[in-house]
Structure formats: structure tokens, C-alpha cells
Image (tube, rainbow, N blue to C red; front, top):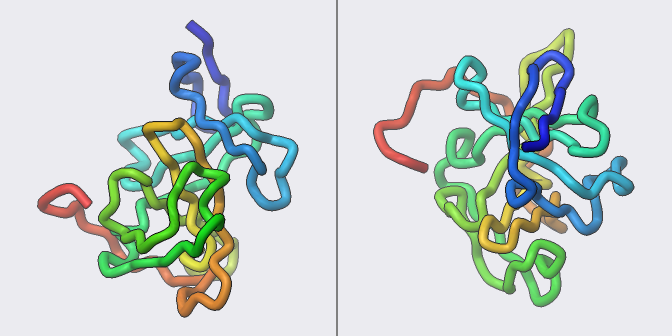
Length: 154
């Protein structure tokens, strides 16, 4: 079984079928196309999108439903093709695709989540993409508020 050694997170055993393909990479990291979504209980509700090929590259993510339960976005024809998504409206509560926000943890400011460019994961096809939503009302610096565990799934 392959193992991914992720700096500061430890080692993770995984199966090849757990690898998510990001056909266009992630903006600024377009050459990295294979990622794993990693979870560690002590960091919940955060998850880590880690590059299989360069494990030092990883993104802190949070399910969008925990930041904005009413979050929705619409994809026009062809906008979600890279992740195997059809045109239509998607919401934060979706399990497929899983909708995540990349979190920023600046040294001198509060943590924020990027809701303007969500990461979507099509679990059935093992495809992912960071979508750049044109004309969205959502912000790329949405403040994170204190978190309490939800009573049910997102």
C-alpha cells in the first residue's frame, strides 16, 4: 500500500483509487494533478488537499456548508466539465460533488475561506477542480466564525 509523507501532518496510507485527478491542477500549481483529501481528527472540521507528487504542497480546506449553509453557485454549460459536472445549480449541502473552500491562515489577521473559488470533488469520477466563479457575490476572504459540530451531516 502506498504511503504519503506529508510535512507537519504525518504519514498516510492510501489506495490508488483514493487519488483525485485535477486535470487542470490548482491555480498557481497547474503542474500538480494528483491529490488526496486527508483528514485528521484533531484538525476537524478542516481537511487537507495534498499533492501526491509533491506532498509539501497542501491546502487547508473546509466544507463550504460549515462556512455558509446557504451557499449556492451555478455552472453554465462547459464550466464544470473538467470535474465531470453538468451545468446547473450546486449547493453547499451537496455530497457529490463535495464543495470545499480553501482556508487562508495569515499571520496577522483572522482566518478566511475562499468562497469565490470553491474546490469541487466529483467523488464518483474521482475528479476535482478549483472553480473560479465569474461574477459571484461570494468573497475570497470570507471570515471564519467559531465552529461547533453540526447535529447532522452537511
